[in-house]
Length: 150
Image 1 (cartoon, rainbow, N blue to C red):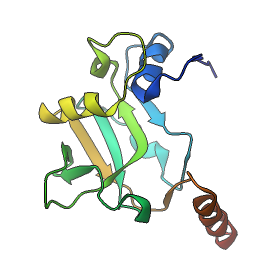
Image 2 (cartoon, rainbow, N blue to C red):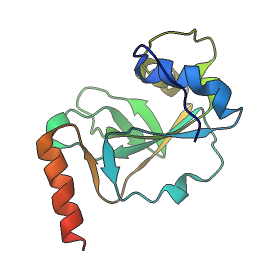
Image 3 (cartoon, rainbow, N blue to C red):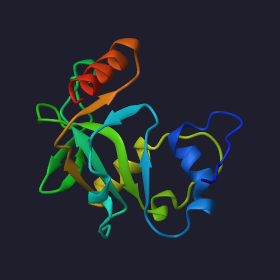
């Protein structure tokens, strides 16, 4: 494991950008540290035909509006009235997604939305369990799921 310390908070985009020298020139997997899932990460080991591949989930109770639209394995920005899904925090990203970026704090979502507009984001719908463990209640949900699987 190699670390890319931030010092100051850099947001997701800025943190990844800072770590790019450690990641090389090939696509890499990003997983948010505050999610729990039984997703089979082996399925991410395939050629990337875009700048990003996002794993999306059904909208959880705490984010009913969702984030994006998945259609024919391509991800688009949400549109009024469309059925949306939520970004799971699991992705494969190509370093070229960050072309033109400069050091400092910035969000990942605007880069993804630009790539979506260019048809450069593929995606899939997670079939399985996923929880954003951002509260004590959702942590308890994960503990219940784990207990039930024993």
